[in-house]
Length: 71
Image (cartoon, rainbow, N blue to C red):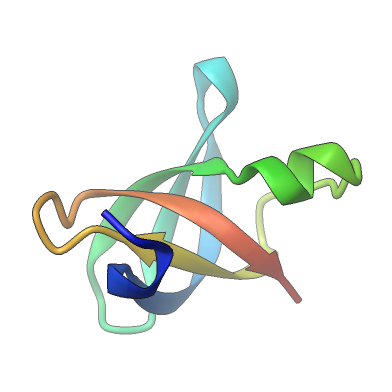
């Protein structure tokens, strides 16, 4: 799947889970489990509960995603 095919959803980090996963409450009211994308990991961007983030979600599995932007 290409990067352009992913849905960009803004949300807020609500909980830090084990294994580098985060629980995110989207602005549309849905809950997601997301990981940090490679670029955020490469530049050591820290994500903590309460941060506003943008996650990229696949249309095939809308419950999991990648955190692609913090701020």
